[in-house]
Length: 228
Image (tube, rainbow, N blue to C red):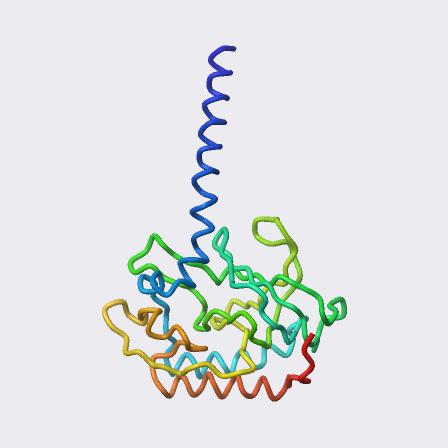
C-alpha cells in the first residue's frame, strides 16, 4: 500500500511538472512565428509549377462541394496546439453554410497548419499559403464543424481532401509575390525572405498560376463590401 501511494504521488508530481513545463513552451509557438527575429529560424515549402497546375485544376472542382464558404476578417493571430493551427475570425459574408450568421465569431482549425521544431530545418507548415494577417479579409472554405483536436472548442475545419495540398484560404487583397530560389533544403526556403507573400512558389510561373486561381475564386465569391 505504501509503495502504491509513493508511486501515485511520484506520477502526479511528474505530470504536474510536465504541464508546468509544456504550457509556456506550447504558447511560444505563436510568438516564434510572428516575431521577425524568430522567423529567421523557420523555413517554408514552395510549390512548383507542375504541382500548382494540377492542384488548382483539381481544387477548383473540389471546392464546389464545400459545405461552408465564408468571407471572414481575421481577429487574432494563428495559434498552434497539438500540431493544429487555430485561427480566430469574424464572419462578414456567408456563401454556404445555413447555421452560420454574419457577425459571428468563429474558430477555423487545420491539422495541416503546424510548427515543426524537431526537424532540420525547423519549419512552418502552411500548405503553401502564408499566415492570414490580423484585420485582413479572406475567402475561406471549410469541410465541417467539429470539436478541435484537443476537444477544447468547436471549430470549422479548413477544407481538406486526400489529394488537396493547398490551404483553401485566400486574401481579398494581394500579398507580395517574392520567389526565392530553392537551396540545400530542397523546396524549403527561409520564411523571413517570403514573410509578406500570400503564396510560396518556386518560380514566377508557379506564382502566377496560384494568383490566377485565387482571382478566379474571388470573382466567383465577391465581397459585398459590408464590414461588421
